[in-house]
Image: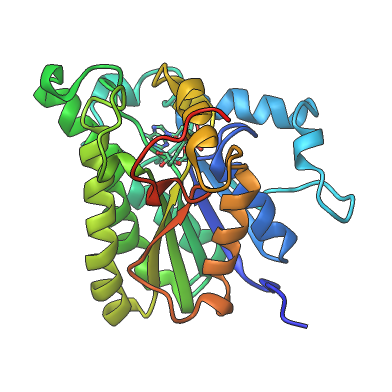
Length: 297
Ligand SMILES: NC(=O)c1ccc[n+]([C@@H]2O[C@H](COP(=O)([O-])OP(=O)(O)OC[C@H]3O[C@@H](n4cnc5c(N)ncnc54)[C@H](O)[C@@H]3O)[C@@H](O)[C@H]2O)c1
């Protein structure tokens, strides 16, 4: 039987801080397929996330198909806005959410990974994070700082992560990120340069597939996911309307489930996806092919 088997594979998912988003669902799918999963969490969300885990508040979501609970091999602090600790401003480094966690930069994360697991220890890297401080503002009203912050955290961070983690990948490694159709179609309300960041992320996926494929032997893909009312998406303010609109107007008229995206991620990360790199893979119930609204039946 053909199955997705990730036994013996080690995965790191950046951008997990609760059980409601795509990153968590991907963690569960990869673990269900046999991978060992670590996560990297934004320092401002780290304490709450650990408390939720320790107090059993996420046990229902952590329940695996075999009845066991999803566990994380490591939970690292990670702020994708900074390549090195020195790049972080002093007031952030001394902030109460940051000062005790150690080196939370991209380099810090890669160094901790190498110290914990050694050379050639990573098989799957998932970038499941985004942030745009001006996301609720139209592009026309977005400040330069807000635009650059969106690009920094939501797009450049993928380049930085592939560059730093490339050397620790084992042969057959896979990098995956999450994008959104606002990169190519106008989604009013998805502002602040987040649409630009997703366009950059998709373009970078193609170039990184070539460069990191040649340099490190890894594949690089991105999943263009349909709307989901995650914590990050709720900041957009119109997420319920986006979910409803897609469910109503897609070829498959139902909301995208986190597991739909997660199973695709597991496939892409597995040896079954060995021929796929540089791709934007749509997991949106087909919404992206539509040229006209259908409306409610
Ligand atoms: N929810 C959707 O509708 C949707 C649709 C398509 C694509 N996506 C993408 O999926 C990915 C995951 O988002 P989600 O919607 O599942 O929400 P989520 O809230 O589960 O994940 C976003 C994560 O990004 C983290 N983050 C924010 N700033 C960070 C920083 N500077 N450094 C490190 N981490 C940081 C947050 O703490 C959070 O854990 C994102 O790339 C998002 O753009 C989401």
